[in-house]
Length: 254
Image (tube, rainbow, N blue to C red; front, side, top):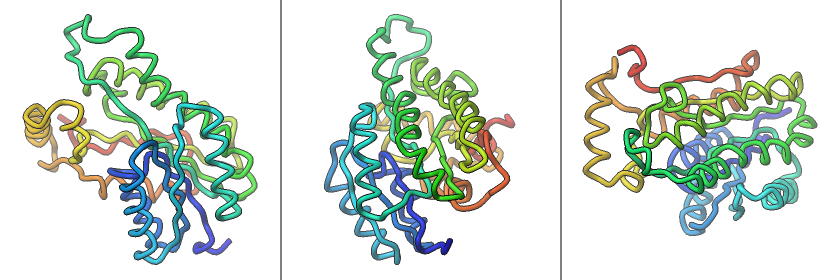
């Protein structure tokens, strides 16, 4: 299978880690399906970047919390490129809430985050599984979080969903092998606008400074650095499956 023919579907790829992974795969000659939920302009820019990098790409709108939309996204990818070799479940969201304030989150908050952060991963993987198996060397990368390991992060609900993603990764790895590998990347603080949108700019900067102080590498990762690990797991690392890889510049060593 020639590398330049390989196809990846990346959910939530209009910005951040998903967008950077799309660009890096395109630079390797991959074809990329750039999924987005609402920001068509951002997705179009990522598509243009992928083409400029030497790959090919299409943007496909879908709310991956909806099962029918997941199945339609897979069909759109097959219609555009004829195959799917890799799936990156990157789409997700949070609701910032102080962990000590048990009234800051409602049951509906938990359900919304589980729909968009966990159920979406299951539904997308289920929809893509036949095509991934047909690839002969299929790979899935789920985006978890260090919050799912420590119970920290932007909210208790967010941490709980990411812990679920870590467990779901292992469950899917067991049943989709040997044709498909399933791994998870669990970033720590990533220097993107996502934090400011969820927490506010001032709180995001305080959190960033705190993580830099704790980190062995005295930095926080940016989206491109997390994407490098995602690309490794999507395109290589052929003996790895069921792993949760924490990428947090060494904060976990503090």
